[in-house]
Length: 393
Image (cartoon, rainbow, N blue to C red; front, side):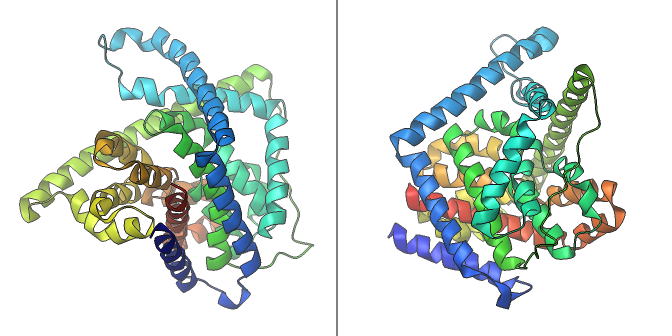
């Protein structure tokens, strides 16, 4: 049965992407099939093999250590604010972002991270059939963040046609920043966070290849990455510390606003319809949850969590999900967890458009115009990743 649902899921995802395609005749089938096979193999290796288990345990242990180191700095500054035996969300989940941001800065400074990003990007360009810039951007967005990645390619932003700009932005919205991966791992199982990052990387190329197909000529296929301004080591540390702290503050502020707003909306909708707003959204999203492989009896609740991520952000959805995981089967937990690990939500449209506009106003306006189509494609990437996991689990 799960194989039939998987096929149905693929057909629905590809069908929805095809409906939004701007050049259906130019869709290249072969790279799409190759990348789907790669996704299935990688998901199987990560979730169903001993080697995958060892790898995931090693990565999660590494992030646990990083969070432990981060907690020492947090405790030194804020230790007296927490009540004994309690762990405030901001201190334990958000502030460790500062330390992980510093590590990313150090790897950037010693030129190791750019080397890794370019290497993986080159391999991806061979598999996906897309340009070097698109492949570099997809990997870089997953490591340095959806806003920061555009700084590294700002020399080329003004010269990019609409099609290539869409691909860059879709990659940024479909992935998550490495600096907040550790925070996700405190709310959902690390193996699903890691699996989602890998699947979304290929899923972004698959969906873009259908929605936004184009051919990059040899003359256009070059990579001109912006080097960061020359700084001393300690200047760089200061910059990345402040960047990490800003991310933590921004996420914290958004959580306050969105959680409060959801509580208010839930209360109002419950008074009018007798059910919460999330349950109402759950009915809308339940067919999507079902074609991803969620059992029918759990589809409404799972759909409510998925919808929460779309209308708020992944942090709010993960917080809600972590409170009710006992109500779901292991299969549903895996599918929904993978779906949640991306930046595909309405607020990301403004974040990405703002980041591009800060570097090139004309291109920023272009991004704002195709913002909804961007979210549409990035959401299909999350659905595709969840469908792949539904086949494997």
